[in-house]
Amino acid sequence: MIRIRTTMAALALAFAAGTAGAKDTGYVFVSSENDNAVTVLDGKTWKVVKTIATGKRPRDMHLSPDRQSLYVISSKNNRVDVIDIAQLKVVRSIPVAEDPEMFDLSADGKRLYVSHEEGAQLAVIDIASRKPVAHVEVGEEPEGVRVSPDGKRVYVTSEVANMVHVVDTATNKIVANVMVGNRPRRFAMTPDGAEVWVTNEMGARVSIIDATRDAVKGNVDFKPKGFRPDDVTPVGITMTRDGKTAYVTLGRANHVAVVDVATRAVQDYILVGKRAWGTALNRDESQLYVVNGLSDDLSVIDTASRKVLRSVPVGRVPHSVVIDD
Image 1 (cartoon, rainbow, N blue to C red):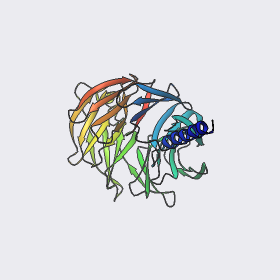
Image 2 (tube, rainbow, N blue to C red; image 1 turned 90 degrees about the vertical axis):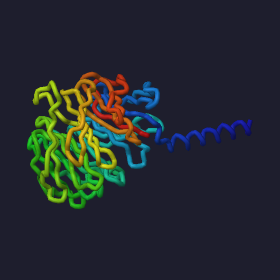
Image 3 (cartoon, rainbow, N blue to C red; image 1 turned 180 degrees about the vertical axis):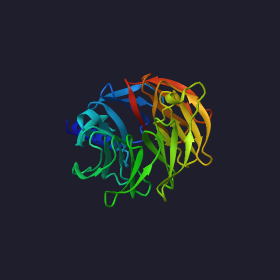
Image 4 (tube, rainbow, N blue to C red; image 1 turned 180 degrees about the horizontal axis):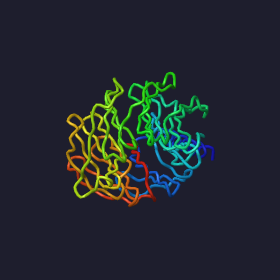
């Protein structure tokens, strides 16, 4: 009996050790605003592994630097839920201010930078204590948040002011305000941090900011055939690690634009689902994942052929996608 108990205890410890260090699982996580949940897909079979209940209206998501946790904004509960990837469940929540929408993490994983649409603020949250470090007043309806590669700056969009605010992370003070296009939404950055690309939802373009001068240095306009300018509403944007290609979702135009970063030329438009929104690349960048908010599915694109490989049903009104590979 003692030997059996010892063996069972050893197996339990081994299992706990294995799950505690779970990462690179191949899971694809999709937040669903109307289901109050995150759908977990197996990245090989595309079957649903689990549906994780979260707070109300989950939106933006990010992996922790150690890839052990997934942080999820729950906008209607004014919090960030923390999902343990080994257990696939919410293990704690971090309270934030009213109506959080998008966020980013510091490189060391110690702070959250959260935009608050109603309060027109960027909140800086210490993750360990779950307490705010600072609240930075920005323009109305802030959304996109992006920490620079060197961690020294945070960029925040203001949809109403048509502006990008540049915040110094050492002082939590605004150091520059950059006028961009109409209704700026989200960011991508070149690997060296020299260029900041911001989508302009109502301007059918991307504004390119020179990070040294804090000024717009160029634009990329989108004109897919068969769509009126008002239907071209870029929101999501993802850039390859080498900084050579940017993928931009065009919202109501139901396409993803493929952009050559150096020349700023649109190379292709890829038809996806309805209201193309959030995007993510897998680790080897062979596949691009696009959530479609009005067709409740995930488009999986082969980046070499620029063809949709499959459409995977997910929850209602999917918002963001994250891959743990």
